[in-house]
Amino acid sequence: MKPSITPIAGTDIRLVPGDWPLPADLRAQVGPSWAKLSSANPHLWDGRIIGVSSPRIDADGVLRAEARVDAYSAFLTWRELGFPEIGMRNLFGSAVIVTSDNALIFGVMGAQTANAGRVYPPGGSLEPRDVLADGRVDVAGCTDLELEEETGLKASMARRGKVVAVWDGPRISIAQLYHFDEPAERLVTRIRANLDQQEHRELADVVTIRSGAEAKRVGGVSYAVAVAEAFADGSLG
Image 1 (spheres, rainbow, N blue to C red):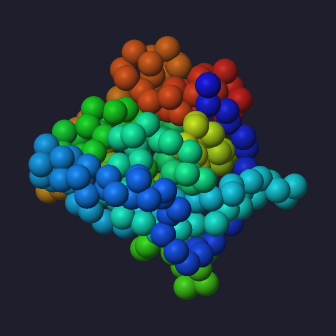
Image 2: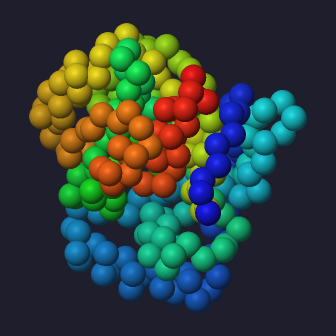
């Protein structure tokens, strides 16, 4: 099914106790699956990841959900099995870089990551570090941080545009548009220079996107292609 895009006013996601509700048979596969994945890619690290349940957009435009923390190995096992329904969604922030000459810049994930070669906006999984003192999950702050960590660009250098929720099966991308007053060529040059200085870079490279067809051609994942298509037809602003 094609991803759908819904404008939102923000998020209100609250951490609740307990792990993800993985069925016992799926939970039993986490250890063997992780052993296989980490053997193939020793750079993988089994940290903690936040997933959400019961996501909804209320009348005020705010996306609300409950958040739970589990092992990254549990998430990867769920993914390796084709995302069977467990009542959870992989919600994350996406930093959509918009250039002054009306293009988008997507990242190409590095070979050492669990998403090697995949193409999508800079971003990352929500982690315990993104939980505020009152239990709210700071999706916006996480997205700002991922933008800077992955590209060297700071959110303060851009004008914030729309925020949309991209519903893509088990995934929900909370996409924040960042409008920069520089053309694509200059931003790409700056990002690549920053990547060359990173000791533990997540991105192998970045690509300039001007249409959904171009996003598909370079290997963009489904939600990233949907964002590119919506931007090209003017519905993202």
